[in-house]
Image 1 (cartoon, rainbow, N blue to C red):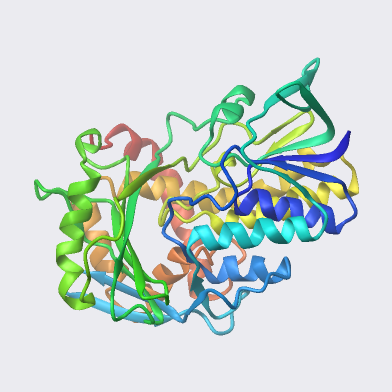
Image 2: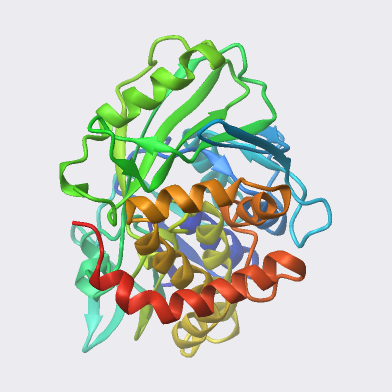
Length: 402
């Protein structure tokens, strides 16, 4: 018996374990990978993610501090600082996932969570209720099970927590390279990507300075683009790398480029005795592929309701996630159908960085800083975009690029 079982030891699972253990619950975490495993990712932490780490009382001084974002669209380049008077800290960071995940799960263990690595589990049911997990010949019963298995693996599929096939998803690929600019204080995002045929790609290329002699370089693309199924990520990365090689004085790739999938939706986030958090719940920003901040927040939210009442926690968790994230993520998915049209993509990118005012809105979107409660111009633009895209959504889906 234990109070809470967490399946998955990434940022979302670690956040849930830390919050629950600090609240006095007994927690067992199961991770199928070995201790210290790496996770393919861009490694960037938004100010929103920094805010979540502060709430968890995590010391992130080992991460490379980031002051803002450099956005490039064609020949236009704008370098902007993260907001100084917003709801979140005025800085982000780059923290390679191998270090970040290890630090977070070590903190979970330090506050009392029990860690089990190299351990694959299967769900245990009491009727229709998830009542625990089984590994080998051992069964662990729990008041609630938290599914933090990343991009919707087998356990999530078993529970129906799968991507909505009508919604977009993303693919991304990254590698590392040495660069004398590894201490740069801005993330760099190129919004004007093209594949080897010259087709505009809804997505972006990035270089994130890690502060350790290296930079994380990668590209991501949305499934709404024309000929998405034929997209070769390795070629797209090589094309983007050729554009940045000189300005960043990039050395050779330090490892083989690795790709991953970004779900961006989920048909189900909770049920009797369980909740899904982070990527397993489809909590990924469709406009930048970012999900670490949502993973940290959703893990804390799940554990908060669990500590109040395990029986009502799943439904309360789902309602809270809907209130906090659903409008923004829905708007992002609709926007991805819009920019799937090459002409609209080109026009939109010119607008995105065309003026400082609009570029600051883009900055807020890329930093996961905007929602329906955001004050000022950014909040108004988001609210207007949500309404307009809601009206246009049926047409955008019907005419989506193939």
